[in-house]
Image (cartoon, rainbow, N blue to C red; front, side, top):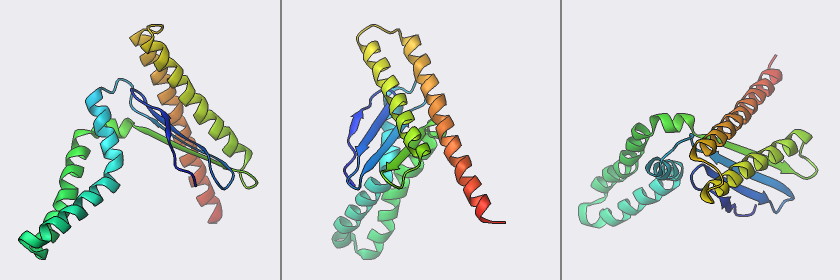
Length: 178
């Protein structure tokens, strides 16, 4: 697969994806709750990156502390280095995590369904709408209230895509079992 590079993303979230090496398209849309401020936006990005970054930080702490304090103490400190910030972020971002919308769409040539292609196109359309709204807002062509309204509409539509995917997955699981 190819490396995903965000097309754009600032106030509202990000849209990443595009062609994949195996043939097809893959998209990833992240929409922050409307009205998210700079601090919460940075913390939400940290929350999403923490599973990998936190493990790397804990491993680095383990390696660095193993010599000076010994392996048993380092084995105690490393999980604390991972879990401490994780629990703080979880507590600090309660509402924002609940309202964060993350939607994936994949379409592989040959094996993809028409629904998969429609989902990809829908994600790109939602992301493009936010990109255009943000550019218009930055250029003074859109008021803050109108930008928030568009952001809220796209957030609701993206949340609907997540709900549809979960319902479809539950339906497939339910149909496999009598």
